Length: 458
Image (cartoon, rainbow, N blue to C red; front, side, top):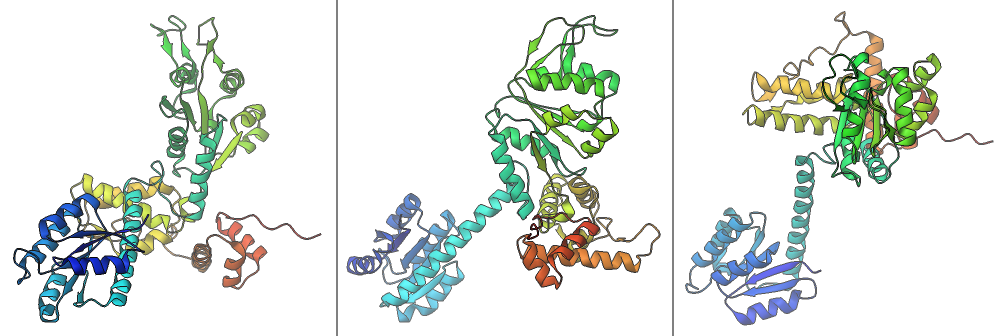
């Protein structure tokens, strides 16, 4: 589809000449006066307008044209309005540019100059459209409430889209605060079950003596205090998704019953005699090493493999590059609005501190630091002190040479990986080290690998 161009001129012969000159590249709409121009602009919303200033009923003055410029920009301020003016109207044309016109051309219009200018106008308009679309995505919290333009998060978003279409159980792995529940909700929202319930339970927050009843429900009189029948979280999730957070904290006795549910999609309430069919998809999450739990005898191996049909790894915040700034800005925008503190920004010092901090608490920690900083800032420019990041040193108050060297190595590796979109070989070449050395350094510094090492040649 050709982009739309509105030509406004009271001279029909000029309009026809201009239309024939550019008709192969643009869909041309024509108007001969201000009211018709504004009407057609509202109807078609062209990105670019070529506007003559001398319009009826006052063709000898620029007032109609300037009024038309104002009305068009009121409807859509981003419109690229090019003024066509005579040589003796140059000062007026400059005045129009000051009022929001994009550029001006002298009459008689040089067709080649016109074509070049129109090409530039439409190109800039497209760039601005792309930028606004990006900003809209950011303002709507990105992908299902998750922000991230880094390679690692784009990989996560792609995996969520794929796994959402299936019914397979999912195990989400990641450090505390990386957004495992948000990711589980994203899977639910992208799935055919999106209209069903999403039921979440934190298995570590409920005493072991109550957890079974909370999950499976109970019948009236099943135990002291069971005054009425109660459905458990599993039943409540029927037709939707059950999210089991901190799954590694579930005792072995309950793991057995959950395994049966995963195998047969049936449960029994405490004190009940009948088997209840439940159609619920299970997503589990943990920051623990479940395979170590299997070896230690605290986590059943058969339960693990039933849960982990699909595994989704969430990267720590420190390995997400420029997502740090994106997420921090998003929190700043949200909490500023909540606290009626408009105009707050991060200082360069604060941004540097955000990038240098290791974020052991990940997104949750960043959220809390920004929320606290917004409440009582010293000025409109938040500092590292406002974020309580001014001391990036060891507990003893002194940063050792080893700490400083590791911080520098970590920063340089992250920068090289961001520059080369996570590709290890060119990043290693830029750092002046071999690829195996880069892998060793990343292991030592706790950085997440974005690629797997190439297998050695036989």
